[in-house]
Image (cartoon, rainbow, N blue to C red; front, side, top):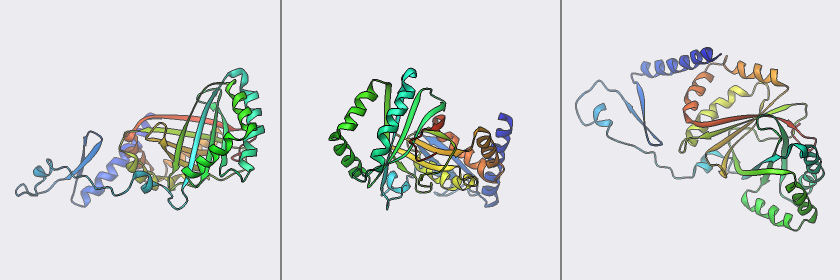
Length: 292
């Protein structure tokens, strides 16, 4: 398996290099801290524009906008919150029942400008864990409005108090969605979901977005792509990709099929160096989840 992946990735590099050589240029990359410096070879060894002189020139493309604005659907201004709750093993069933009684009512109430996108239990990965994904249409003002209104909700206060007795730990992140991914919408089941989380090297989010804007086209054939997000508050330079499959074998077949498409190997080759750490969770939706 590993040998096959290596051959495919090497083939992607060979094709990329061949295309560069056919244009009369060979592009090399040198890492300086978190930045990438590119230079091209030249047949001329004289003059101030020679390749040797170019080694001592660092060029930084000026950015006139924040990374978030370059990568998101600005016209929609959706903000997402993902919650990870580590539940005491003996309390997981009671925790799920409690969530099923409270969370759908908030989702359905137009008084709160938020939507429950999905709620799951981790099947493979970190055990006895619940994952909730919320969407706030209207961005940070909507999030603030929901928080203030929930403070006055006695039922929600009782829910939080009872929930606290069942948890060992919890953490959350605020996320924005990539412009080139689908917006998560309710779907019928049964499905399993995979949440693939990538901790990127600082300074590489734009590179990641550029490659995946093309890569997502290779992963739409079985409607497996659900949503793609990147963190704004919490663990920074964190990316989450959410996928849906009928079962584990369907997941294996779909992922293997991507390697048969020309260009996928190049995407993998160029994005792997951007990653510091990656994690995969296979999740089962609970009864309250709009994503089934």
